Image (cartoon, rainbow, N blue to C red):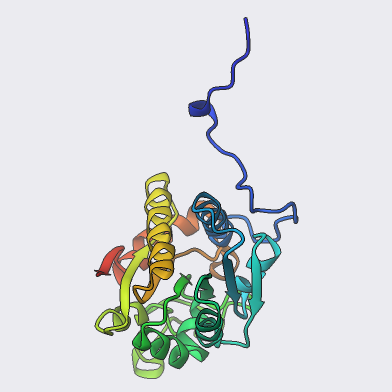
Length: 251
């Protein structure tokens, strides 16, 4: 019997823009999934030769090792500022930043807010795992109340450490933002939805509609000291109530 490979039976294929660099991320890390989605969307939109990504500092920086597009590495927290310059000088390019919570919501808070307030025609992909993964699992601005980290081993204490910074919510009322959404990639349905939002964000950037922010609530198996399954469950039970998924703004 002839062996016919039907398109509908191909359940997974590596996106064309993902190169053969051995994956270094920890098992269960969300970054690899989002890399695949970024690469797929850019390729499907035919933007491979028109895309410039801005990589930050932290685990997110290694995006430039895996996705074959033009990249610029920014100083810690400065990705939106660099993206602003790149887009204004190359108006025909699709420019986006790929940042973690330490980069975007700590040292880069000012750059993020002001780029969004100006309505720069860029997309911001924001990975929020509520911890500093690369540097040893310290508390980040987005660490939730009572969550234990290397620098708050008894849990985040509001009286001492303040409240988690929900920066995505802060960006919603800014007139320069056209799309603000919070997603995840822990299930097939969530992956499909995130891909849809990334597509919309990139379309907005090319159409000059303003700034789009796609937050991805993520896992950090190493920082959380959990297996992949445990991390996904903990994220659903603990991070999702603090950072509810869904579209917060769509102009």
